[in-house]
Length: 178
Image (tube, rainbow, N blue to C red; front, side):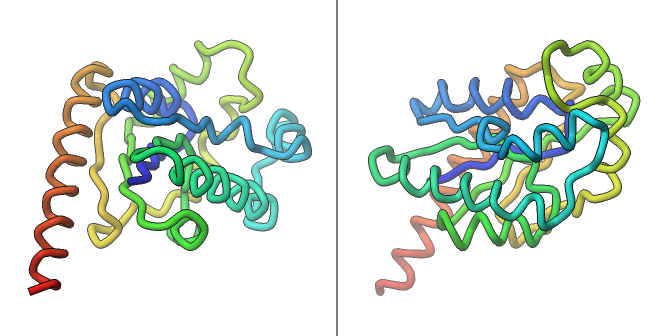
C-alpha cells in the first residue's frame, strides 16, 4: 500500500506523514527532498512551479515509492499532489494510492508557514497552491482531514480510513475471485 499525505504548503504533510508511517511501521518518503535543485531555487525565489517543473519531481517520487514498496508492505509519502493529473502520474509510476488530504483555512495555513523556519517554500506561495489545488474526488480513495485538529487525532482518523479502505479492497478482490 502506498499512502500519499497531500495538501498545500503549510498543512503539515511531513509531520502527519512521519507520524502515520511510525504508526503503520511503514517506510517514509519526504517528497520535498526529491525536488530538483532548480525547483527549490524557483520556489525560494517566490516563483510557483508549473506542470513542467513538477513532472520530473513526481516521476522521482513515484520511482522511489515503487522501489521502497518492493521491500516494504506500506510506504507513506508526503507530496503536495495538488492536481488530479499529478496524482495520476504518481499512480502510473507507483501503483494504487490511498490519499490523506490535509486541509485547513487559509489563515491557519498562512500562520503555520510564517512560523516555520528553514524551509525553502515562502508563505507567499500559499495562494498559488490554493489556486492550483484540485480537491481529490471520492473515486481517488481519499479522506479529507482538517489540520485544525491535533496531529494525534488526524493520524487516528487516517488510520481508520486506511484500515477500512484495505478491508474494502480485500472484499472486492474476494468477490472478483468467486
